[in-house]
Length: 403
Image (cartoon, rainbow, N blue to C red; front, side, top):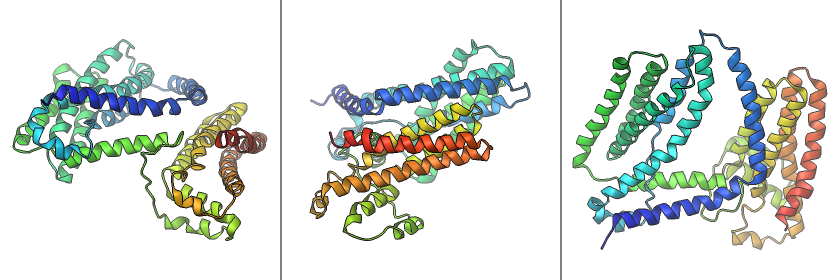
């Protein structure tokens, strides 16, 4: 006999086991130390910036805009699989308790973002609005209640298959959440603050009543879960091999000029393979671009010379550590074994390409420092960055590639 509670336990247990296995690789010891340093540095400068703010700073506007997005983005993790639209479809009426548990789990998956973001924004609120840190619990309780209403409304909206309905729902709920949070942080009276709450509740009840005549959109729900897991697998693939990951290849014609500069020849086979994989497959290009932009901003706004160099090297390490997975990206493809190329050539081509990426990132950070007129720090960043790249590629990473 079918038991929805047993199905929930099996699916949730499988999900936690699957994600936990890869999270161990993502949050390894080295990376945690780097992130702690970056968080500590960012916290120090953030506190200095907060202390420079005056009472006229638009804190409620900024806090409401950021938190409204977190509230409005309320996906339901259903843990459904492709086969469920065949085997569970006849049992849809018996899955009420199952989906209730998925909603509860989704709430706890998403509430931590509100907890962290609100904690980060509270010093700014206290500084400019002359509030108290004790208001944090009140704000958290109010935001949590609104999160529940958003999850309820979003679940009911998913009974509609029209894309414009889903898009309109997201926009409307973002606006309602923004108004609620702005009034809350502006210390408006309670009757006024409750108006957006009532509006969001009415939206949820409206879709609840209209969804009664509709069935679950199984393909949409399964597709959304697959997208979320694919995003997680792409992240995990930066740290270890993920067999479940499906390659997503993007043409990117505007980068063809790079490939045209690569010489042709039997000894350049892996050079072409790694360069095209980096620019067209997965999220390698996006990863390096984001780290260069974020690291460049950090280096630019950091005024302490040695701190700039250390921050540049830390972002260089983050890039190098996560880019190692490019070496084994094609290990599960048998056609690679048909190449009449010695394994040493593969190692050499990867080392050259790997070093080029790290040197390019080093040059970008040095250029940012040079824009500030600090040529000594820029020169030292270049020297240390090149030395780090050479050591990481030829010693540290090489041992991991060839254990």
